[in-house]
Image 1 (cartoon, rainbow, N blue to C red):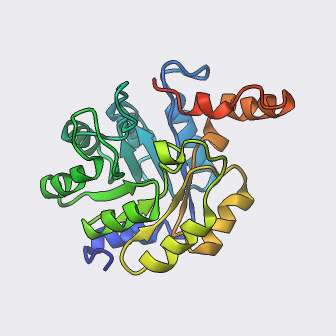
Image 2: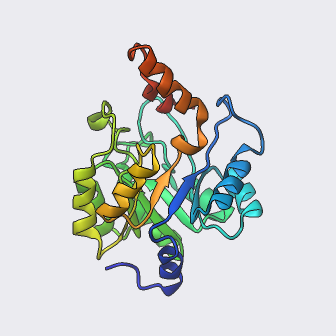
Length: 250
């Protein structure tokens, strides 16, 4: 069953049918400036977004100060060469995101092995015990991982990591059939959102039609260098794959 905490439900119900914009920038991005993530969030607010997804305590705090009325899905990306788990991988990152003021904490809930040699999805139980008042957003790559996350108390599930695991590394678009199955089977137990590989308003609307509670869009809105590279890669006959840049470790 979806959370019985009325504070959480009110916040999440306000997102229904809306757009959450992922406002993230890394220091090696060509668009990086100290205030770029804030400007992205202010633009999202102007456009009517219902929430923001943000990376790192520093950027979460800055966005929260500038756009306090929009709830933040916070995460903290940490890359290691020996694993593909990089989204809020340990309790240290969970604590940092929570203390930065994010209402919702996103973490990797796949079955992948972390840098610490644990299974990524095991962190959810520990994080919920430590921060019971937080809302937890499970980033998964497939149906089975979504099922596991919900069974362990995730408030939200989304196929964010479809395309970022070894089994799904070569995909080019979202698996809408699998996503529709998640919406159908899990809609009464958790909030199912769509994140990943959405490039047009029509893509987003398809997901709402299939049952998404809300949609998260990042690169197509806030990473113009990747949008440009998609064009260049197609015009060059796919001699290079823009997804290599999208998946780069920072």
